Amino acid sequence: MGKPTGFLEFKKEYLQKIEPKERVKNYKEFEKPFPEAVAKDQGARCMDCGIPFCHGDTGCPVDNLIPEFNDFVFRGRWKEAWENLSKTNNFPEFTGRLCPAPCESACTLGIIEPPVSIKSIERTIIDRAWEEGWVIPHTPVSKSGKKVAVVGSGPAGLAAGQQLARAGHTVTIFEKNDRIGGLLRYGIPDFKMEKRHIDRRMKQMEAEGVTFKTNVNVGVDITAKQLLADFDSVVLACGSEVPRDLPVEGRKNKGVYFAMEFLSKNNKHVAGDDIEIINAKDKHVIVIGGGDTGSDCVGTSNRHGAKSVTQIELFPEPPKERDSSTPWPLYPKMLRTSTSHEEGVNRKWAVSTMGFKSNDKGEVTAIYGSEVKEENGKFNPVPGTEFEWPADLVFLAMGFVNPVKEGLLADLQKEGLELDGRGNVKADFGTKPGSFATSVPKVYACGDVRRGQSLIVWAISEGRKCADQVHHFLMQEVEG
Image 1: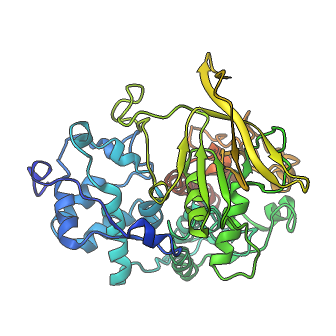
Image 2: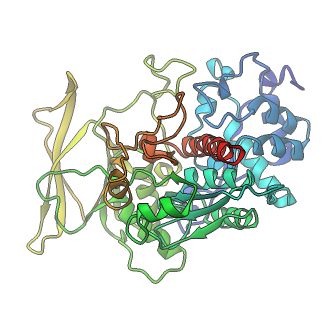
C-alpha cells in the first residue's frame, strides 16, 4: 500500500449528513461523498493486512477488490479506482448507499480501531465516475443469437441482465410493476436512494441492448410455457415478496398495514403519481419489526409529521459493542442506529404484540402486549409488564417468508419446478454447487427467490454468478 502507516495516522471519517431537523423536510438524499483530500486519507487507512478478509467469505459478497481501489484513491488515480470497482460490482451506487457493509465488519483494522470507511469510499468513487462521464455502455463485440428472459428487475435481475447483454445475448427484463427497479424502486425511500440512480442505469443497459418490459406479470400476462418457447433461457429473479404476518386479535382493523404497502405508495407519490398515500401526519405510529424496513417506516413517518413513532422488536436489545457470539471477522451482533432513528423514534425491545384495539368504526386505536423473555427458544410473557399504547397506524415490518407462489412459480411447478422447504426455488441442479440451475431445463434462479430474503449486495452477487452459468449453458449450445 502507498501509506503503510496510514492506519496509525488517520482516524475514521464518516460522510457528512444534513441535520435531522432539516432533512426530514423532504425526501432527498442527505449524505455527501467525501471531499478528495478526506477520501485520500481514508484510503490510506487500508493497512496492507496480507489477508484481506474484507473480500473473503465473511466480507464483500460481490468480491470487490477493496485494498486495490483504496490504494488507487489514496494515490489520486480515480479513474483506475472506478475501473477496478466496476470489474466486480455492476451498481456500486446502490451498494454504496444501501449495503450494511459486511466488508467493514471483516476489516482487519476493525480488530483494534474503527474499520476502513470502505462503503463511503465506494460511494465516493462511483459518484465521481458519473460526474466525470466514465460510466458508459459496454456493448458486446458480437451477438450470440441467443435470447434470455429475466423475470424481475430488482438488483439480481438487473445484474444478471447486464452481464448477459454484455456477453452478447439478447436480453429482455420483465417487470410486473409500472417502473423498473423492484424493491429498489418501491421499497427503498428516496431519502436513502433517489431513483435517478436506477433511471440512468436503465439508459446504460438499454444502450447495451437490454429491453425492459413493464406492467407484465409473467405467469399471468404471459404463461411460463410461452416464455420457455420464446426464449433460449429464463432467469428467475423475482424476489421474496410474501411478508410475514402477525395473526393476533384485531389484525384486520383499519390502520394495520404491511410495511411495503405504506412504503411503495409513498414512493409512487414522491415520484409524482396521483395516488392516495397512507398518511402518518399527526398520528401515533407503531412499527413492528426492528430491521431496515422498519427503519424506513420510521423515516417516512417522520417526514409525514407523525405525532409519535415507536418501533418495537421481539428480541432483546443487542449489545452496544460486538457480541462474543459473532467474533471478528463475522458480521457482528450489536446495536445499530440508522439515520432514520436519528430523526426521532422510541425504540422498544423484548416486546410481544398480543393484539390491537379498535373503535366502533373498526379503526385501530391501540396496541397491547407485554415484555417477553426468551427461554428455550420460546418468548414467554413477563408477568407485570403488560402495556397498552395508543396507535393510529401500525406497520408490520417483520421480514418476508418466501416468493409469491401464485402465477409464475405455480405455472412453472406444472413444468417440474421444485421448491425447497422454505418455499424458495431450488436452484442447484448442475454438475457442481453454484449452478443456479432449477429442476426445469434452461430455467435458472438467483437472488431472494432462490436464497430467501437477503441483502442487495448478495442479490447483485447472485445475479452476476447466475449470468455466468447461463452464459456457459448458452455457449455450449452455440458451440455444439
